[in-house]
Amino acid sequence: MRWPVFAHRIPETAPSVAPPSAALQAVWQLGGHLPALAPDRLPAAVHLPGDQRAVRLGQGMDFEQLRPYQAGEPANRIDWRISARGQVPMVRIFREPAQRQCHLLLDTAASMLFGTRQQLKITQALLVGQLLTAAALQQNLAVSLHTPGIPSLPDRHPSTQRAQLLHRWQAIASALDTGSGGDIDWPGLRGRLYAQVPPGQILIVLGDFLTDTATDPALMGWVPLASRHRLILVSLYDPAEVHLPDVGRATFVGHPTPQRVNTHDPALRARLTAQFDARQQALTALAQSTQGHHVAIPTTLNPEGLLTAFSDALAVSA
Image (cartoon, rainbow, N blue to C red; front, side, top):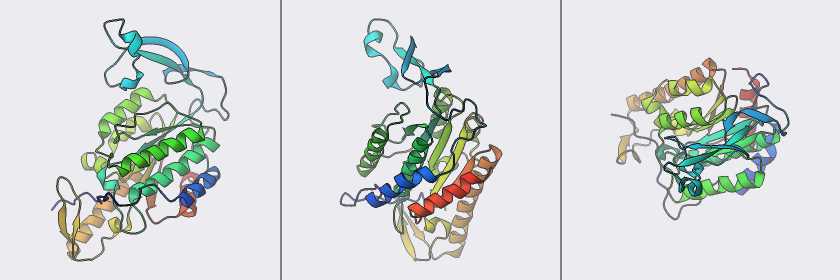
């Protein structure tokens, strides 16, 4: 039997997946206490934003040139007015800012909509994401939020505006309340990031890595990005994924259909625990081999516990 994807379908009357307001206020205050996300050894490090001009062209504020559209680029980069005058779509290219960027990637697959204790994994991920956003802003990093599973929320330029990023997080939670989260093409996402993000930035992945390890058990697809950027892998998990409780027969929402699982079977519980351990070991091995970090976060941690977990992990050199 193949283990069904952990998931929980939220009824229309359920409360929002957004974290409680008190917890959000706490993480925005605690974010300034996190250790540095960007070590000085990375290339092109700057401690304060300024008017330096970067060599690399890409996203930014200073217009540089027009060029033909390339397959795989976001359609919102096309200048439709100028493209209408010619035969091919044209893209506006800007000069990259010298300020270091922090890119947060949020996994919104169905497996993140699961929770057996205090909250869903996606709720904890939203809380962790805002803790890291607050930390990045305190450290003078421009922040970009990526939600590839929500087509209605295309990527935006990195921002240093707290209000803008708060609104972005609220929009993500609202989209998830309507069931907008979907499957993610992880190889395609990594390819786009490799092509579009200038070297020397910080990439933070928030998810349970269930769908990613299903096709790439050792997560080797992240190695090219990890060779160019600071990679921080944040794995969210529910206590039931570590040790499945014996509650008799239970129904889990899976793909393509819900599956009935006999949790009373000790062999099944042992196998699922082994699969969870293998996933965590793969994440740790990848982080260690690429000088990154892996932080495992249960859904039961409060904001103070999150601060401690990240402080301990970031303070240790991988």
